[in-house]
Image (cartoon, rainbow, N blue to C red; front, side, top):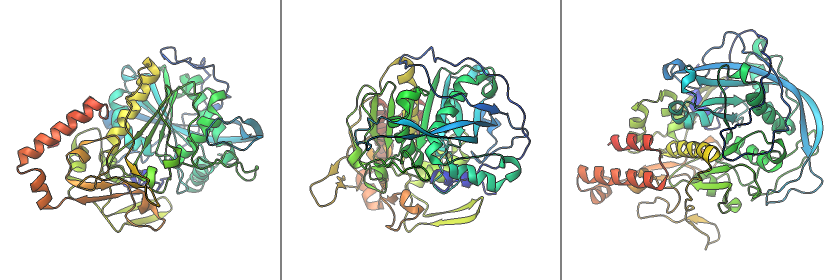
Length: 502
């Protein structure tokens, strides 16, 4: 199997996480963690604690990376969790303000799985647990936010948990490895929200089994793309009463959230332009790309102002999926090689990918150069800032939105002289450019290429006009890095890396 597929999974070209082994019984539950070190508390959790089985015997490296996880000081384990999950219903139509009042609906038995990546040295554990709702856009589990954020997760000593919350991912696991996963059962995506709650409760209440020797203090819910769209529904409908997670990172969501309930239950759809409810007890951080705001995700109508519990960042020059996730992240063992490769890719961007899925080979041949932005550095900042927000109450900085011109028949981005968007969260890639970076699609047909955006290297003449000498470029680049650090868009560790790539 090709190791390139972990990155393509983040492009909504999902990878089945296939493992082989037998089951071992789980240990007794521990007390529910109250996250006592949190500054921002919330009512006690009400979600059900599931039954845990595992760790599953004989785990092997999944497609999180092309390198062994022990190289970065992490170990992987896998568990099955099971119980009875609830669907949800609403007596009234769901409103665009997100203040949904739902009731428990049908109940059904389920048996799913989660994976845990944790530091092999318990002394390095930060207390943070990032729980990602696996992306199943192509019918297989994928971990895009591990790809985007693993450098920060590892250097901070966080635990990462990936959850098979949805039916498509579970079914593909069963199909790909029936000996290992044949006992899994998913009753349908109407039950996915409660399944995700119960996965979070497992982290809180079954720490002796899932995280032996570790004591979580901050538990964050996370999802990207399709999973972010589901997490929006979760935050508006389920989070206010379940009270499982201490904060949420909603990454690249659509303006229309996932339906609250689906067939065979009565379908309850969410309206377009749905916002995050403004009466939250815990912080929510929304991180959006150009693709999300004006592209296929149609987020623009869902824009809303920041509050004491909500932060929205829109990142200039970024695409829903980019070459870091699709190429560099597969080999990023937290060293600088991937950073250097990403910097170089702005001048020589790839135009297609060869990907091997569990179901067979897939070739992505896009009709333009794929986006090579610095998206993942800003994601890492958002992840870090959300954990600090929960732990200390220190809010992330407010950032301006991307500048959108709505004077015509269709909204368009306002661009600078080099074609890069104005406004938004700024990075050196757009403030000391060597290329025009866009999140809009390389072509209009509905395939995976529409998520990758574009890169157009600047001409030699334009580069000479902007930077008469190499030293001029180095100076402007380092100044842009310093500005992004000062604004709060970059973490110090990433600013040091970006300073040194030139």
